[in-house]
Length: 374
Image 1: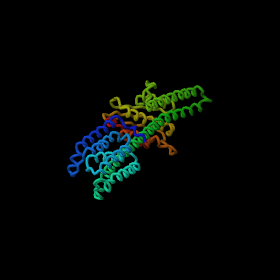
Image 2 (image 1 turned 90 degrees about the vertical axis):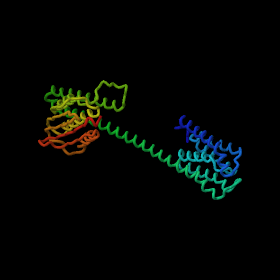
Image 3 (image 1 turned 135 degrees about the vertical axis):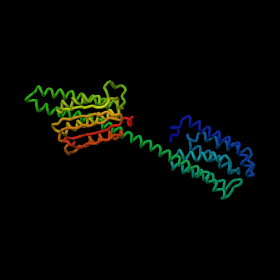
Image 4 (image 1 turned 90 degrees about the horizontal axis):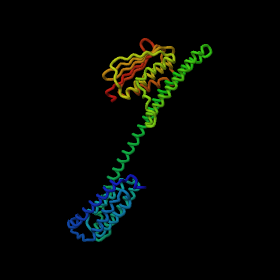
């Protein structure tokens, strides 16, 4: 396992500081710890204390090697009969590091070996404490190991949470792109299909009118491709692309109305209220609701006219699209467009309804709040 990856200079400096602090504590506190137990520490203790503390400077780069060095120094210290002192803090940090930064199985094996080595002083040495010394010695392994394992599990759960959140955001982005492409391509193909049917019907008897329909097909396909390109450009954040084409919004309703008129569906647009600039998300959602509603009219309503009513209010924009046709007929795939519109609107905190109109035909109504979307 390459421990160099993910260990920056700040981590290395922090580990060096920890090592120096524990070195200072060991040099200052070992003698008082011996005096408290009536043991003369002497000068031989300090090299062992220094080795155990300074090894922690590379504890996250080489955790197993660090634990081995610290365990050896601490075991030698205790076997020589020196008192429980600050050197055990270095041992505690080394055990914690292994548990926090290595896989559980590896850490458990290393911790078990360290515990066995530490318990040597219980049965051998200058002044073995006997079995009564096993309990406090074991605590210096079990407690930091448990804390380190907990920290590692929390860190791994947090990392998994970030991965899951990134995956969720990616799925949501893919769904948004699919919905955009569905709206753009679905509307364009529906208009082209209707105009192609008109051209085929008129080709033999009135070729001059068929030419008009074919011209409309060419114009509609170009506009659909342009809109698709703009949509994908926004998704890809392509800075080198031509950004002069406007993003879809309510300002493009006249072009949308003309396309539908060319496909044989007269559309009336009524706008009331004080016009103002809408947030991009609201403007796009409002346009997509109108576009998908009119596409459904083109596909399912039969010979019909449509009316689009936009009402700008201080708190948002209200949209209503009605037609005089027969409404959508049950069949495979019917309702996906309505579900997509509902998702768009509710995602922005708005309301959406769709169903047969009281006077016949079909009615789509949506309210998009402006203040909540900002």
